[in-house]
Length: 346
Image (tube, rainbow, N blue to C red; front, side):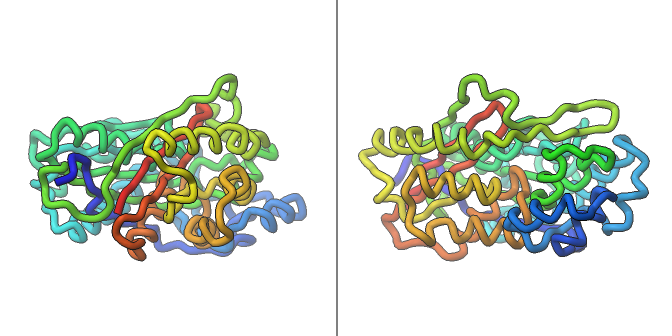
């Protein structure tokens, strides 16, 4: 029997308010027009789901009301995602021993998973590990930290909840390039992942190993300036360059430690940061033409969902699994600037 945890199920849930790209751009910011055209055309996004109906964004009075809306919608989507994932894994809420949660688009104390624990019927002794500030890398990092925990407690069941409502963070009076890019890229959704320790009946791919990296002098590449109006995006044009500079070497070194090369990886589960980031990953790793099809589809259909996106790509790959004995690699990047790698085995 393997000594590594396995991923039993992934579920992704979206709010019901779907809009096309052009409609979303002007509706979310209130200042659409020609300046959006090049961002809309190059974002790789065709449609997105939004936390609330599009006309309601202009009525939000400020950060307090936007954050209250975040909590309400996050609880609804989070509950749906958790229940769907538990059902797919044939796990009950009382079976869950530890819950990891991640978000970077709203603030809640008690945190979202704490508010849902009693509602869903989890045990009062369930452990909670809320993660905040990891941004887009957090889906992969959450799977990695859940793996670390379950290595120590192989009889237990872990749950990861990711909720991101990016549309509620957009600044309607920010005409910066970063805000225009964010308005063209980001969408809303929630994901839940169920993992089992090695002593439980295995299901799905095994998490073989993980690796975290923080890159020097990159703090200003991506993040938030948080103030009285809420979350103001920091997004450098250097994101794709940093990815291409560092990620290829990191991936090759990581795989080499397991006697593998990129040619041994049949399933690539990459966060869809945007078209230029996807192209940088393809180039630096010399990937086959269709290797990131699921990544591009997630971006096209949902936008960039921050921490949820890589879990949406994971869900798509679990629904169409490779042959037994295959390897997969999960890759995501986020603020710091940093990356997370997760090696999977089927």
